[in-house]
Image (cartoon, rainbow, N blue to C red; front, side, top):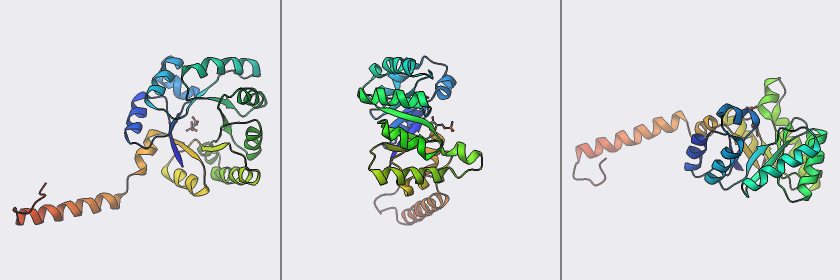
Length: 223
Ligand code: E4P
């Protein structure tokens, strides 16, 4: 499963990229607004750090302006993926732009038929928002499972990008279902490698090592 970071913050993107396991970036208008920077400039900066797909969302809500906006985003870098909302106009724009070779991420997906339609319109990515469904007492991960089944039934190549991830369990559930990609905030990416038993085990190994080397300083490898 590919791992993307869900942020427009450059420091977080650099730190995640330094881990060596970052496959892409997703942004949305809220995340960009939080940074208080020029959108296009920020996208250029992100694409200099990450060579994988970088999703950039349009803010228009009708077909023609969406397509026009997309055409200002794609020249920024070869790895820009245009994000469109799962509404009727977004679906039409997805078809138009996909037919022209633009990679599309259909976002704000909350039910499997939106995903079916996005795949039929040629979307590169579909983004079911898991955490936001959990927030309203609906099991978000069920949608991911249903989309996986539909895509496999018909051999759609659209990638399932699990979005709105709140904690590491979402990531492991996404991987178990067979999602293609998960996008997570930096905090969740950091949490993934944390386990109290790893910390306790490591402390014990090092303490035993130090004890042995204190008793026998002639041994190689003292810390
Ligand atoms: C994905 O592309 C979205 O930017 C994101 O995952 C939304 O997450 P949120 O529900 O935490 O805002």
